Length: 266
Image (cartoon, rainbow, N blue to C red; front, top):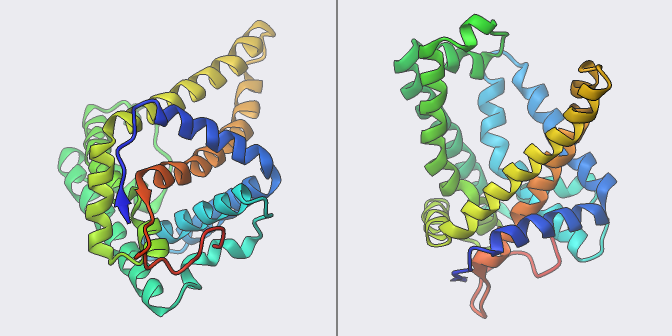
């Protein structure tokens, strides 16, 4: 496995590739994303341990969506069982993925714990246990600070885990090393990832304007939320589809690669 340095314009290409691949198998990839969201939501309603379980499964679920993308690239229909890829690659990979999930859950809890120093834990409790927040509470300065702290801290954590599930699954990299390699890959290709995220922001903003302007002209703002919800889910599914291409460009397998899955396999 070799780290590759790519030009900044690659970030835009990842977005385009994600969209094109999604359109090859839109029903399958959208369905798998909804399955992923549904599983996370079901776990979240389990008192106390549900959210922790959902967090721990996030790396494995992300890997499942990446495996589904690879199936679509190779012209195959990704079935729901592809979401179990992380648990079917052998005992060593399974153990590594479970460790990765535990580290992810601990990382999120640490971030929430630090953010709690800003607002007394309001944001952390809402994140972990759900519940509605009033407009007054949302615009509370301490709550806003807690959200900002959590977002800032999550950025380096997202870089740690961005490539880690794929490195564990397809390259047999140990969990802690996978986090290090993922962070290095993101930092060394910072320009490409900046373009990638800015491009997705532009897509989301453009989509919002595309829906909001006609709805406002028709004097029917209620339709905005009705249209935006399914479109947002589709954009999110495309976003997860595009993640695979960032991994594909940042890492190149070599002859000594210990990947448990051959190219084109989950």
